[in-house]
Amino acid sequence: MNRVNKILLIFVFLICIFNASQNIYAEVYGSISGNVYDEKLGKGMEGVAVGLTDLSGNYRIKVKGRIDAFSSVTDRNGNYVINMVPPGTYKMVLIDTFESKITFRKDPKQIEKQVILEPGKNLVNVNFRIKRLGIIYGQVYDTDGIT
Image (cartoon, rainbow, N blue to C red; front, side, top):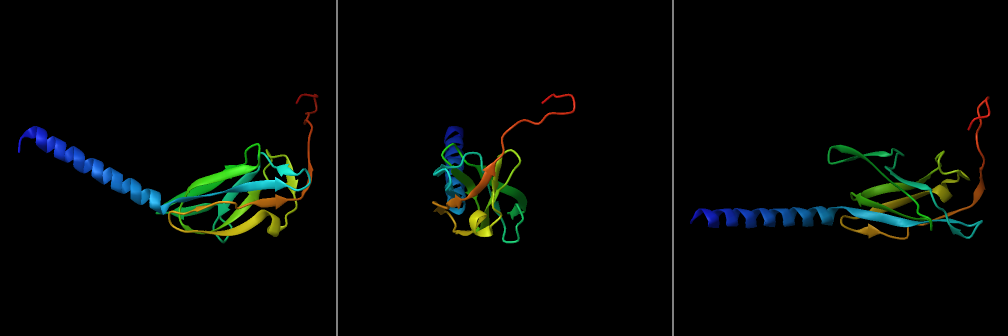
């Protein structure tokens, strides 16, 4: 076998290994998607953080020896997607962040959902319907009147 054929054979072998690893990787992980809906306004809520925790409420989840956090922020229509989630049982939670300017009742039925993600599957329509208490608008000034 000449040198060119050996190089070509090695190249084809590496491509086969790469494709096999991509298929294994794609079959294991999945995604979780849904919508956060404001019942008061009758539309999706933009800018809400949606996080994934283990069943103990930890946001840092151990995946193959590595610690990861899984979250997303809703778009202008209230939709979110969390990609590359390993299979398992999790709690989906809405995170009341300072940046979101959103206050909602701390009712676990409203802001938490338990989900089971099977290997290679995608969960869709993991939706939340929220009754907001209100939105805070305005500016904060220091003692010199500067924002």
